[in-house]
Image (cartoon, rainbow, N blue to C red; front, side, top):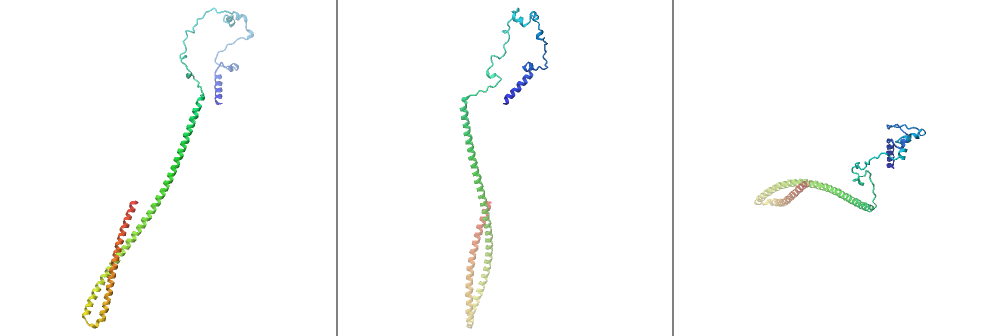
Length: 259
């Protein structure tokens, strides 16, 4: 529809520019072409036309008296006229080949298959990416949870280490006290033994006192034995606490390596 309207506009412009168009003959306009004033048809004199050697009527009725040479053979031929082909024409020819329709349909089907395959591949890749992102999120959450658990474990180990250290210090203090008490009890026992020997060599009337002193000496011996046993047990406990403290220090160093 637009092409026909464009052709009409071009034709209209061409007719407006052409001074010899039929439209200009119907509605004459002022142009630069010289005009000839002809006499009216009724005023035409037939006698003048007969006497006019250049009239059309005389030219038709009489044979020409002048032989004009034929110069058509001497005129040069337009260049490149015989070398023109259909491809050199200025117009475009739209040729419809019905045999190419199956090939076009095949190409269209192939393109559709490739497009569907590409869409399916993209869909699979998007699903794979979504699964990987979900897996990555789960791993990050798991790693964060494990890091928090490890941090709590390290805090517990540090607390246990502090408690064990405090217990070891307290045990060492008690061991020192027991050693002092044992030394005092040994000195008292030696003193009682000396007094016992003096009493044995003394008066027989002091027999009851001697028995009493022997009883006290026996009690002191039992207390000394119990003190030695307790001291040995405490010494073993101190060694165990030292071993536990060393293990806890190793765990603390291991946690620092993980951090």
